[in-house]
Length: 629
Image (cartoon, rainbow, N blue to C red; front, side, top):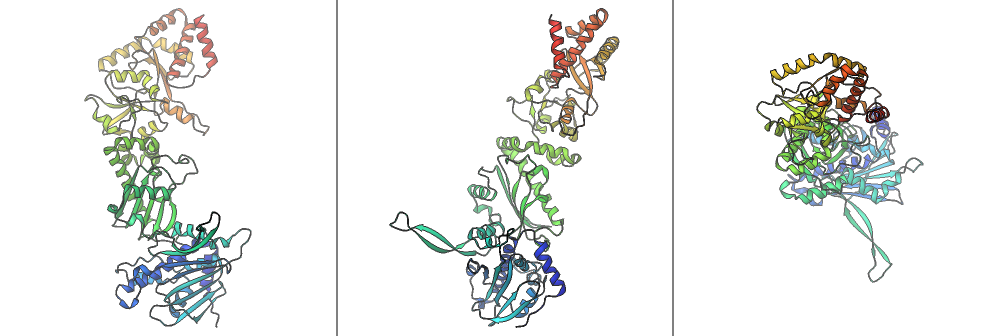
């Protein structure tokens, strides 16, 4: 029997295949099962027009036969088989794909669910095998052939005995080493898990003879062993089934099994898209936050399948960061894969799918917000902060997409922990209201207690309470909603005064400019300005800010581990109607030293009301004690 040589290019390809192309050795089983499925598909396609095939659809199958004693793994199919010429073309010339050729010839045919494209997957067998033997008999032929190779040294082809049409591939596994355990691919549990992971939705049954122990009848401790032919794969993907056939329980059970989450998912999205790219999808929004979701260890991504064969366990390109909590599956017939079938060859189709997936998730969340507010708020408490980050990130690129999904605490909510949307806020605005007002702080109660928030509420206007660190950054990025600008109650002109009121306040500030200069001198540059305020009602003092950085943003930015510190342009505002102001005016003429002490005390008080740290708590305590004495 003549030893044939691979072409020089094929030798290099085979060496590359074994050592570089495939990331994980376990991939070999996926590739060989996919090839077997292709072979069956070709014969099944033939059977639709050829009554002589003689095999019913239900009789097609793939069989795995591990033999620990012989240290071999055999993959058997009753597909179309190969002639000697096809063996030479398909196995003697690496990267010649019979499946791709068949798919091209029958592009308009039905039921041609062919997986293979490149003709290289077969050679992944050499990652785990020292010798590969292929016995095959083509449909319509009386002669069977055997192809055998030990790798780059070449191969032989000869005739052999084989009674049935189809192919069997025998892998003689490599010897185990300290680093590699090739024998694991002979274990039932390992083969079962690999089929479940990669080939669960191959549409033909994948079978294996398995052993089970049962208590011997009539005994208490004697067991007997039974062998059964077990089907390892589900065959029909749930996402390809008609939605009308499935119940909520079906969706929930699939989610729990597939994604190892014992919780019931909040919602599922089951769809098929056709057009520029065709795919089936089954997406889930979890009801609970995964334990590692807000950690560096969390990996986003959807499971990606090509014709029912898993290509990537977590394809991150399919999900934007703001929807990274979504779990699910995408199965497409249109993906262009690289030769290892482990990643995409180019990303045009992937981008189209990702855009459609993003739109689908957004629409589902908008629908949930409208039809089941309680369930949406449950979702929001788990993942709302991610949508706010999404609004802020990438210079607000996604703000139009996400802004109507955002929820905020509000002074209009009867329940302190209740939520409102921006659209709901605008619908309740007074006709003469210029801004969407908000207060930022660590909690709803702290926001509500801010002096400026009190004034806005007393004017009959609603205040959003921003309690998350990202909230104000998100609103700054949105800038305005339905042509209404956002306004921090602690920053700038609130737009609540008439021109007459403004003029009167300006006159009072002018009268007190010497007092304020003395007070500012006492604070030694801690504030940019001191002035009378129209935003105060019952409180004597408050801090406000000018410029782009608010007091709350200052706190958030300075809490980050960057080492860089920022400071808002602080303004100390005083209430001209409060008795404290009259005391300050008196001290300006009678006791400037005490005026400096009172000024410092008022500044520290304003810091505390804003939820900011005082610079020297001990000095503040001593100051209060001295005043009490």
